[in-house]
Image (cartoon, rainbow, N blue to C red):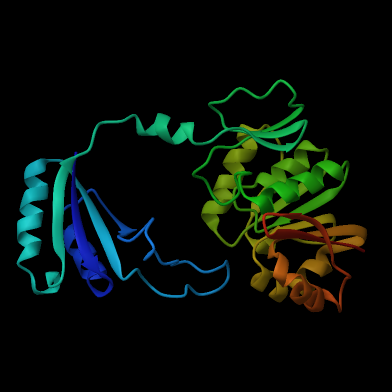
Length: 293
């Protein structure tokens, strides 16, 4: 395979990328041309907030082609277009063959939740100290155990085992929290998400881990639950306050994540009419908030 690299100002990135895709590029990616220099600019904002700007001032657009001749033809064709003004061809180079599956797998190691509870990719053996293990591979719906919000939720489940309880995982993503609840003895687990792909992912992961749960769209949730888990983001969590609290049975617990430390007071205010939230855990600027009913 061969890589065509182009230098483009911000306003040229989109038309150049579209043209490369039309020229049968296998993939097109964009990088900050000033990365690792004093001119580097942060592009992405915090979760739930709009980005500070749409693109970098200067970007390197990288197109991958199967043959060198294709890359050279694409470079010649695109260089004479009006939208290529102020752009520059940086060059074409071969890309060495690699075992991409093995390379991707090498980047993911078992994740420790507690000393005895681990998330382990299928290509790894569980650590000797692991007593509870969830098998879950990266690249699925959100929730692989590598993000602090997921780890905090799983840690809470391990510290408060829902033995013989009815549990709801609202916004289940990969289903990792629902699977964790089932692993720790929940009698019944409902896992719901607005994304049908997440529902399918949850079902697949539940089968792979040998646990029973019911996955579906949000309207599948019904009645009251001893534990309600929701690892989403602060804004939707505020909107969902009356709904989520209505699902919690007397004596039950509400567990919320996807919240930045600075958003704690906002969440407390949104839930004040229904429950008294408190910060129960914190990791890397994210917090876990819980309420007892």
